[in-house]
Image (cartoon, rainbow, N blue to C red; front, side, top):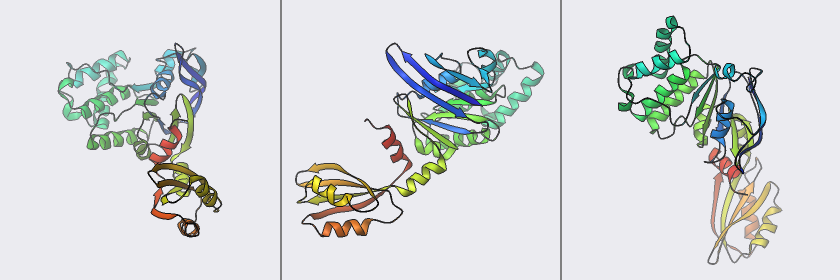
Amino acid sequence: MINAEGLTKFYGTQCAVDNISLNIERGEIVGLLGPNGAGKTTTLRMLTGFLMPSSGSIRIKDIDIDENPLKVKGLIGYLSEAAPLYNEMLAFDYLRFVAEIRGIEKGRIDSRLKHVADLCGINEAMHKPIGTLSKGYKQRVGLAHAMIDDPEILILDEPTSGLDPNQIVEIRDIIREIGKEKTVILSTHILTEAEATCDRIIIINRGKIVADEGIDTLKGRMGKEFLINISLKNALFDNVREVLSSISGVTGVTLGGVDQDLLKVSIHCGSDRDLREEIYKEIKKQTWILMEFYHEAQTLEKVFRDLTREN
């Protein structure tokens, strides 16, 4: 459905997107994740044809976006982070205006308006000025705008940004409903939000893809990896690392910090076994004084932090 090869985008000397490739199938809901400034919005704008890449190629339904940009744009509905709404217009008038400029036949406009109003839950807001609507309703009108001409692909940039928890759940439900019929790509920096909505997650950091996995694969990674954090007195980190790294299933031992005479250590475990007993027994053999010992389960948020942290 969507195939991008070697996408690169420079703004002057700054590389915002660095040689990434994507392949998204029909009917997928894909989350594009990354910290602020990672290159998510630039990537989406290139996929929509709003920005031209510095290098690389994009094909939508096997149509080259360079060769036939208008045809490709006709396949895509796009909602930017700041929905481009005319606040002085009634929602009904605005969506009719959008339908007309998108070239929908006059005989179909009313049925499309009714469909998107029902789908996005904006019937009660249709005859109100957009400027008087809440942020959540404005986002719904923006979604209706993106859906008005029944595109095959929906691209959403931070669709829940600035919404309260109830509004986030409402928009999430709408996206899942839309995803039953459309290919959806949405960007966010909140991994748990993507978990609740998407089939697949692509994590981008500093312009590069650092993960491209299904939700189940990510959860499988979570199930096998966890941390055990300890605090010790009378211990040197090099000795602690040497002793604890010898335990089967320990994949790494890292320094968490030194607070006066208290050594904080994180033990990375990649085993299905519970290693706490073995770690405790090894500590007992030493002259160290154990001050703190607790288990930290791997979470989606932690996976995200590990993949996007500096260095």
